[in-house]
Length: 106
Image 1 (cartoon, rainbow, N blue to C red):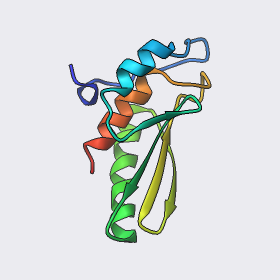
Image 2 (image 1 turned 45 degrees about the vertical axis):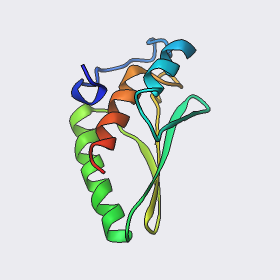
Image 3 (image 1 turned 90 degrees about the vertical axis):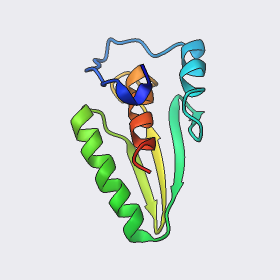
C-alpha cells in the first residue's frame, strides 16, 4: 500500500526510532524530501504568498486528521517543512506517511 494511503498511528515516547535501513527504504519513496538530523525536510515554492498559505491550510487539515503535525516556516512564497516525531526525538513511520500525504496536496 502506498504511504499516502496509510494512516498515522499514535506514537508514544517508548516507541523506538526507525533504524537507518528502514529510513533509507522509506525515504526512497519520497522524492523531494531529504533526511537531515533525524528529520524529513523539504522546501515548497509557490507563485505567491496566498498560494503558500492556501497550501498550509490544506496541510493543517491533513495533519489534524492524522493527529501528526509538521513544523514549517513561511518566507513569502516559500514554505520550509520539517516532519519528525517529537515524542521519540527522531523518525517514525508516521513521518513518512504524513510527508507522502503532504506531497499529494501540491
